[in-house]
Image (cartoon, rainbow, N blue to C red; front, top):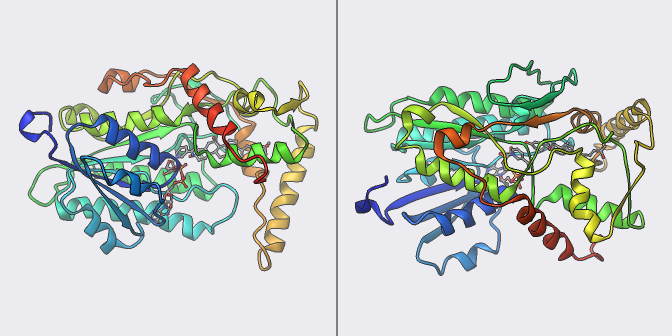
Length: 369
Ligand SMILES: NC(=O)C1=CN([C@@H]2O[C@H](COP(=O)(O)OP(=O)(O)OC[C@H]3O[C@@H](n4cnc5c(N)ncnc54)[C@H](O)[C@@H]3O)[C@@H](O)[C@H]2O)C=CC1
Ligand SMILES: C[C@H](CCCC(C)(C)O)[C@H]1CC[C@H]2[C@@H]3[C@H](O)CC4=CC(=O)CC[C@]4(C)[C@H]3CC[C@]12C
């Protein structure tokens, strides 16, 4: 892919290209992949911001489609050199049924793999998640772990279960012959909790704080560290992997990489305060205001209410037994595998990532709570 005869010749497809991460991947590709000729953006819902991209030198094609529909995926993949599969149903709040989560995340990924095989597309990058590893249901800490750290991955929740199955499909597909006889080269990126411009949960927590008079109440001990990574760096990793996959197929094919950068290790709440603090919110308490057992009771009550109200209304608060367990379990990564395998260095420093995220929160409409 690297020779000059191929300058501006490549066709990329980004599934989920209108989501939080997908939009950053799309913009990053347009800025940092000079060999791009055509960029296809495939999503259930297309964003209006795509229009502004259509005036540049790269042909940007927006495709409204559903990864669960095999024929739509085949049509989108045909003729693409690289597929970045970031589409997924990210739901840990009980909004979607387990069946729907499975259909989108697992069957959708299978459809993408089969489309690559059928149409002769050779390079597939899958956006996996730290959640395929953990935290597990037993609350075991994963402290500064890397891709080889032993950990008992046990999934009971539909989202991590689906991501783990999908990742496995992608990795097992590495080496399959695609139409034309060449081998499929795949790999999976595992972001930890992504933050940055466009992060819906950060937006929800910000508005929650405004509704509570500028206060948030500490629920998680400061000692519980949670891995976080800036969205721009996750996008950059996707662009680099996609670029290097052909030249380094033997090394990178079938591999997994955690997404990491220089964001500090902190608790989920303390980390959020790095951005919400400068925007006027205060985290009340140096220790959790409620004991864990009481929080868990509230979380279980929320789950019960969700179940009871489901025929009438969707009740999906941030607090449920699963989100509490994840937030309350240390999960941090420390690795340099991406640097060793394909020369990844974070594009955005921590200071830059922080400033960009703060500016985004500050630009939010405080009255739109
Ligand atoms: N947000 C996070 O902290 C993390 C996210 N991830 C993964 O990154 C990927 C992107 O996640 P986010 O950008 O956060 O989520 P998002 O919900 O903002 O983006 C997902 C996109 O996929 C699209 N999509 C959903 N179902 C689809 C379908 N059936 N067909 C086509 N498109 C469909 C959605 O419309 C959306 O635009 C997901 O695969 C997720 O599992 C991994 C680790 C952490
Ligand atoms: C919503 C949680 C924070 C609320 C805590 C409470 C209820 C005590 O106030 C979030 C804590 C950890 C988050 C998850 C984590 O970052 C890992 C993820 C990876 C993904 O692939 C998808 C998102 C998520 C599951 C993320 C979701 C929100 C948290 C559970």
